[in-house]
Length: 443
Image (tube, one colour):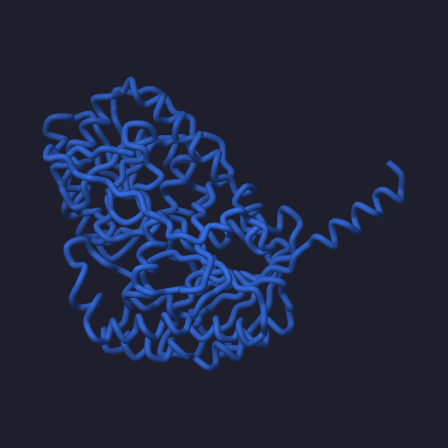
C-alpha cells in the first residue's frame, strides 16, 4: 500500500464521517435505568466506528451554583451538561409531592431556558443529525429547536411517558387517574404537538410503536423497529448445580413486580427448597421486599451494582426474571441477560416479552398472576436438561443485537439509507394469549 493510498483512505473516511448529537434527559453518572445505558452504549459504539459524537444532557445545579452548559471530553465523546431551570432536577422527581410534580411538568413542556441552552450547543456543534431519547427533564421544547435549525431528527421511544405524565401504566389500571384523566389528556396533547413528526421514530418494541400510533403521535414520521443493543461481553461461566438460581436486576419498585416475585419464590420454596433469588438494584420498594422475604437466607439483596459488576451476578444465575406489572417497552436487562447466555423469565406485558421465545430462550407468564409465575419458576427448576439449549438460544439472540450492528443500523437511518424506512404501513405488535392453565404460548 502506497503513501497515496493511505492518504486517500483517510480522506474518504473523513468524508464519510458524520457529526452526530445524542440528547437525553439523563446520562451517566446521573442514570436511573436502562434508557441511559442505551444512550451511553450508542454514543460509544458510534464513536468506535469512526463518527464524531457529542451528547447533550441535564445535571443538578453545580456546587458553584452554575446552571450554564459546560463540556467535558469523556473517552473522545463531547458531553455537554447543563441544569434546565425548573423546580428541581429530573433525577430527584420521586422525592417531590404530586402538586410539585404537576407544576414541574407544566414548565418542562416549554422550558425556554432549556431550549436556549440546547440551541446554543447545536449551533456550536453543527451536527448532521440529532438523535433524541427521553426528553422529560430536559424539555419538550427541544424538538422545536431542532426543527427551527433544519437538522435531521431521529427520536427513540423508551416508555409511555409522552402519553402518561408518570411514565407508568399499570396492568388493570389502563384508564383513570394518571392515564386518561383531563390533566393527563392535556399533557398527552401537549407532548404530541411538541414532538411533532421527527424524520424517523425508533422503538425497541413493536408494542410501543403501535401504542403511540393509535394515539395519533408522529403522523408523518417513518416508524422503525430496532431492538436495544446487547453489550459486548463474554458468556458468563456457568457451573452445573442442583440449585436453581434466579436473578432480579433493575429498579426495586412495586411496578417492576419485585413483590410478586418474592411471593412466588416463597410459595415455590415449599416444594422446591433448592432455589435461590438474587436481587440487584435499589428503589422505594427495597425495604418492603426485604420484609416480604423475611429471614429466608436463600433470598439475597445486593444493592445497586454498576454494569461492570454484572458478570459476577450473571455467572451465578440460571435465569433472569422480569416480572413487570407495568407496560414496559423493552427492558435492557433482557438483552443483557441474553448476552451473558442467561435465559429470561418474563411477564407478557407491553413489549417486554417480544424478544423471548417461550421454551427456547426463556419462558413467558401472565403478568400479575402469581400462580403463573410460580409455574414458570417451577418449570425452570424441573427442566434442568433444557437449560444448555436455552442458554445457547439466548446467546444467539444477543448476537443479532450487537453494539456494532446497532450502530451501523443507526448510521443507515441517519443517512436515510436503511431499508426499514421504505416501510409505510403500521408495525404490528406481537401479542400473547393466555391458556386457562396460566401457561403461555410463544409465537
